[in-house]
Length: 173
Image (cartoon, rainbow, N blue to C red):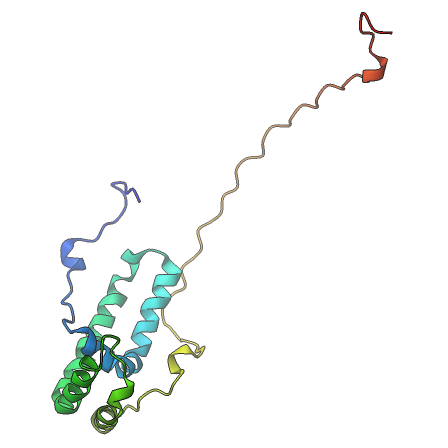
């Protein structure tokens, strides 16, 4: 997509955000609780992303999602380090697909710890697939005005085609 000098491009400092440097097994182990813990922040980002159609306008919402992730995994590390470590290591060693079915015992220990220390229960199956409304304080963006082109000039009528049976063609009867 080409840009002109009039368009706003964020600076490198605006784009630079510390990343959550975790492996896939750790993210998979914490995904359900993380999703519920940061549910509103993530929905706010996705709402901005779908309404604005411009990632530059949603940088602050994206930073809030990252901040929420740091907050969640920091609390897990502080309060449930042992249980969480056992759970993600079980997932990491459960095969190439990181299947959760072999790690239900360690999952229960982790879920109980999160419930006790963070006050959050594991979301039930299908929780993230349900349709839920999201209340926001963001102003809904105005749709750009659709400008129609000017009406084209009238097309002159085509000349009438002579009747082919009435033609006098030399050499024909």
